[in-house]
Length: 82
Length: 380
Image 1 (tube, rainbow over the protein chains, first blue to last red):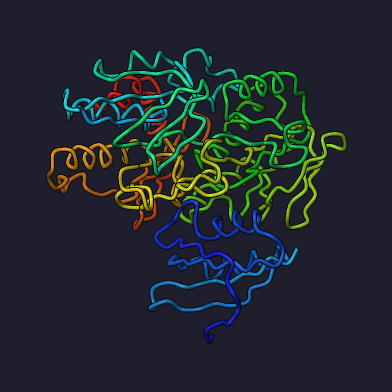
Image 2 (cartoon, chains in turn blue, brown; image 1 turned 120 degrees about the vertical axis):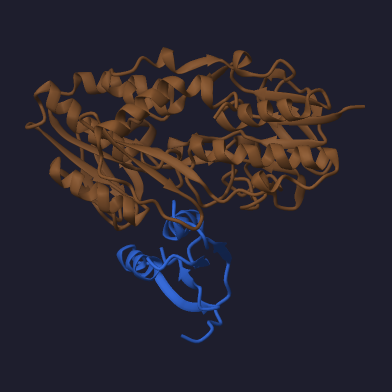
């Protein structure tokens, strides 16, 4: 996926974490964010590829971007929609 | 004039850092520990209180009795920190200056962050709440119990799972398990954050006939209708609600330059220095590190902080053995029926918990008793 041009409100570096995990960091931040905010979460946990998009769908949020960082981590960009 | 080291917090992290520093530095620095309570609490023991299996009065000791004689103990609550002028103000108005500051004020539960939760839900994350839940469970005669995690992050990440397993055992022993339904809720799409632990716990829940409701992030509770609602749109009716409330850092740290809006202190993951303030350190629940908020985390972090402060004071490099924190955490996982598993992990290695067995359970029982002698004093 190409580099996104969306302005990121807050970036959370969750690389190197297994517990509570990058997804939980994202949910915590979505809960306290304003509607319309764009959050980026950096994760090196391979499980995030499956977990983060699945939660975004379940919770009716919007995944606006997914970028690769040096082949070792991913940046998930999520907009809070409601 | 002697260097002044100020430690805020009398839990596992603060007590241990202060004791390790007193041992290392002898009289070479003035060490003051400020604690809101005159008692040191063994919080993992609260897990057993709701079932009547532990008397909470056995779960605290005099903080003074656990501290090295060289440490000056002040009972008081921090009200403000100015990291630029290096002054901590207590609620009684007194001001304490420092050369080095250790933030070990931990986390606090904030049920008020979820509408209806304080009125509608029980938990066991304070001594008083564990007592209240005990009374509610004793009166419970069957029905639907919803147990879950009501906010992230929370301390002792495996405790809700442990509580669920022990609840199944408790209801079975009372002969009312058949008339009861247990639902376990968790914020992500498996029963625990770490996949390898979820893989061990999920079949255990199934075996105990506990229904798991995943991707459930608690949004509100209606105590009159007895309903719990999630961010994802799920509605759960209950007769008894046991929800781990959301947590925050200490009140005086919320929106402080060293912390975020929830009061979690911005901490360097290896040195445990507070970002932008190299003379301030943080450990345990206090930090914003994405790792378990648990006593064992503080236990493994404390030697790093003590060594880094001692080395800085003595004008030397820190001993490589304790120069950095690698994310090490160790947690027991009680599975009920006198069996337990254990989790060992760090920043780079996920845990591989063994199948629950009796040996680990009795290890945990022994640890609960030996804690006072081994952990706060720095023996272990």
